[in-house]
Image (tube, rainbow, N blue to C red; front, side, top):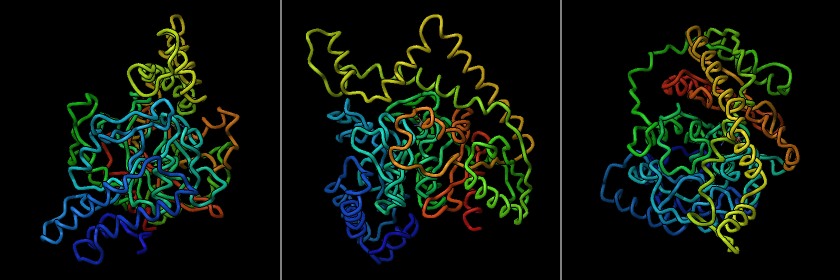
Amino acid sequence: MDVSSLTIRKIQKGLTDKKFSCEDLTKTYLGNIQKTDKEINAFITVFDKQAVEEARRVDGLISKGKKLLALEGVPLAIKDNMLVSGQKCTAGSKILENYVAPYDATVVKKIKKQGGIILGKTNLDEFAMGASGEYSAYGVTKNPHSSEHVPGGSSSGSAAAVSADMCPVALGSDTAGSVRYPSSLCGVVGMKPTYGAVSRCGLIAMASSLDQIGPIAKNVEDAEILFNEIKGKDSMDATSYEQLQEISKKIDIKNLRIGVVKECLRDGIQKEIIDITKASIDKLEKQGAKIETVSLPHIEYGIACYYIIMPAEASSNLARYDGVKFGKTKEAKDLLNTYLETRGEFFGKEVKRRIMLGTYCLSAGYYDSYYLKAQKVIVKIKEDFDNIFKKVDLLLTPTSPFLPFKLGERLTDPLSMYMADLLTVPANLAGLPAISVPAGSVGKLPVGIQFMAPQYEEERIFKIAKFFETL
Ligand code: GLN
């Protein structure tokens, strides 16, 4: 069975038309995982048995003529920083190697309620910190398009799994680009919702003021279906809200005003990426879109702000992993040494770097000059977006400043790794919805472009992305 072109709609149609059974479909994906994942390493845990049992349940429903729920019979994968009750949740870290989730994340609860079949948990950079998929304690993930190149991170496993036909859709989390960036490098669609559109309950926190869960899929429609099933207010996450569809202005694709951000197409962005972005702009212009070059003068401070806010929040969130409350413990002579040795041994190098940076930024005397200052700059970045969205409906930029790089190439230079977030981090700082869609390739390496919209305007980015997909 060839699953390479299957989408959610096609899967459900195939199931109800009895073209294939859900058991066969699920076993095909599990077979693909078994075959392909030795090389790619996209999964940390695979739920073979439970997935097949669940598929049989769906087959039973179909044979009784029951109508399928929104995700019923659809196999999918979940990044291993979201809790699935009774299953291990490692967040890509040694420190959580033996941690078993005591409850379902809200997104997982919603997926189960709609009949989705969870195939397993995907690999990620430790605690979602990283841009290459190389910082996991469970091994490096490779790019399915070229095994010498990185798949992008931190949702490396979810993007690689969708790209390599190990599942049709998956969930990732995005704090600075971790859904969009690997999606761009793996040639798939990745979407980050407005901050608060999706509940973070049961997502292992990295930087709580920026984290959002988002869908990764082969096409925009699937990303939209999955988003619609996971979104919504949740009493367990005070920052979540109910989305009102009606608020989205009716937009006419043919008359769209699209802003091309000039700071995102200048020196420093690889030429091949600029060329593909310009070709995408031309295509949209030919269809009647009004293209305007716009400026967001403060986004050049995005990376600097992020690498203060994120480590500060992460250092506080990660304080709970002390060998007492969660995960692994390194027995030592007293409590203090238990903390020191557990954290010293089981956190990776990059995570430790960020904890140190974060505690430094938050320490007495430095708080004002780092954390507070960064928060003030974020206000400026938000104002830039507010002003621009008075003139244009959407913004267009490349997703990544450079092509997928070679495995190992940026491992010894953290700053060059941080540059991967250059074009995706502004949407997180401003809380905006954004999507990365495939726009071309250089040789076998995929390249994506990004659309950003004002807060709560998910509908607008899905519309434009679906339209762009047809060009
Ligand atoms: N590259 C970003 C980082 O390392 C990605 C973070 C994210 O979106 N989870 O922090």
